[in-house]
Image (cartoon, rainbow, N blue to C red):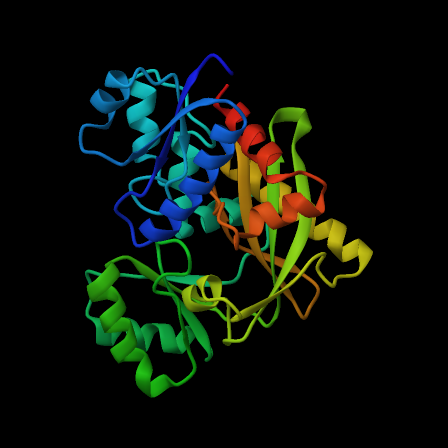
Length: 308
């Protein structure tokens, strides 16, 4: 690939723009230092025209969230016949939509916390009453298609539920509720393709907040990281197997990061699969790769190879 012109696509329009810019810069710097012919580009309205003008051969996607991780950019690149890194259109769309992911997990018997879709077309009061009859508190409220825990809220008190639900529907439109599973929050990187697919060492996340929210993810000192995770050997292996199963079930390709809560009942429940994991100096995937003996430069090239 040394003779190919690579474009690192970063930034974008989602709430994760700043993280994407940081991830993209680090990937760009790595490729540049390794001698690749590389440029960096923000997400433009006339993306394909810009890529053709720059004579780009491969797009290295480092966009997070909507309009980047959800299959839209992947579809544009497919139509333009431009190779790109990571998962293809369907897997990207499925992974970005947490409800769609959960339905796939249910279909193939991959454990995931119980959930209930909230209808944005119904009266919020009626929806709140319906949910309270089914789910005990505390419960978790999540946007259907956001990353980095944006909009995720742990709700403990019934009397505040209706108000919080109304605000979430107004801001995100599509939301759902999920049972609050107590246990260890872990994340498992998945790397490679076909028969070379591997689960990386498991990273345990110990947030200072009650759960691993956006603030805990991107504020220094708000989360302790334990690598490898403190799990028994059989449970550790089983959690890696569940991560690989989730990656395969959605049809992911090249790389992913699977977020899991290992419940106090010793069952690994899959929260979600991220098809374009963060690549900042605080991101989970590079730390897991390093523990497996894979340098950041090697990780970047391995992901680059997923374009073919």
